[in-house]
Length: 221
Image 1: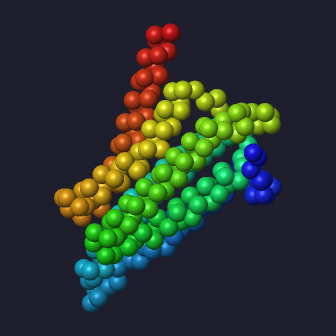
Image 2: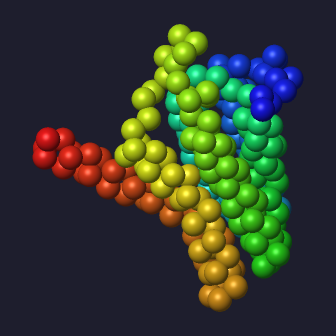
Image 3: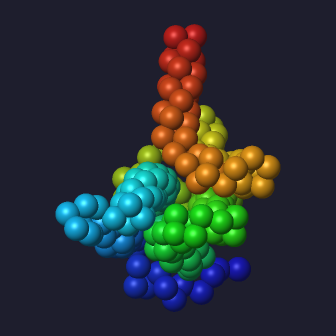
């Protein structure tokens, strides 16, 4: 049964791509807005405000990497999409809303520095990650309708290896934040707060592993 195409009358793949760019810019603007330089008291920087400033800087850098990775994943997903339906639009809009909440939850984590704030941010990121996994799985299930270039729009060809690589990347953030939760509960809240930065080397290593595997297959052929 066809899904009632209400939202897709207003949105296309390209408009979703532009919208995702706007969400990224807004999220980063919110991050930068939270940066307040420490004040001078009798010619000296306030120790408490300086520490808060440094925490916010770290939070900005950490959230910037995560938000950027989410944006890269989402736009990469759209590279394989020729058409969208209402389900794709709804999942995308929910994902955009959750991304805009990242700066708020990040700031809370570094202001309160307690278990609840760390777990709240981790759960938000896990839900974000699973929303993209849900979107990709839905697209794969309806690939004949949504991922073939019948409309004349140029799209990337999805191979089995690319599909596996995409799933690996999509699972990366949920896995990292599940480990973060375990660290917060069993080891230290401080370590759990900085652990998500490992997403940067994790992405690099995953890309290198996929590249090496691809080269081996090409050489074998």
